[in-house]
Amino acid sequence: MNKLTLYTAILCMSLCGACKENDYVYPSVLTEFINAQTDGNGVLSHLITDNGKTYVIQPRDGLSGLSADTLYRSVSIYEPLTDGTENNMVKLYQCQFILAPTPVPSSSFKDGIKTDPADIERIWRSGEYINMVLDVRIKDKKHTYHFIDEGIEKEKDCQVLKIRLYHDSQDDYEAYTHKAYLSIPLESYREKLNKGDKIRFYVNTYSQGVIQKEFDY
Image (cartoon, rainbow, N blue to C red; front, side, top):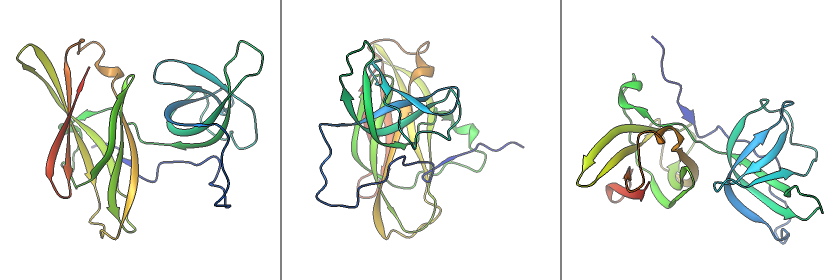
């Protein structure tokens, strides 16, 4: 029996470590949830914003060794440059790959559904993603995350897509707070949802129990 492969919190990569000097200040930069694209050689070559704008990444060391022709979801720190050409070029300072698994039905989780708590620090919709920063209490276990597709229901004059956070803490001790960065890709719902429909996201929290956040499609 094939088991669903869950995404883990450890699935991330920092291409440029944080500066050791506390008083260092970056130039005029943007910090953004953004897609990072590799070329045929597995080198990060482009950043693609959620509104469809594409930037060319200024070549430098430390951008290689990835899967070829692959789109990664990331939180990136970058500086837009003016290079005098038609290309929109950026200098990439830091790129951390984040979790963006496509929601799957509950039947895909052969070992059952886990909804261990996590608090929402921020959550918002951008383009075809719902992005979030979660506060999760951890110690030394590898937490796993996914998104559960609970189906589309008709409510009044619109459809409502219901998605729930899957979180397995592996019975970790709640020693300190860790930030988890995740995005829900909505591309697979293009043929199922229309303008005016809703997306309802459910999260089990530490202090409030299950809460919901609703977004316009």
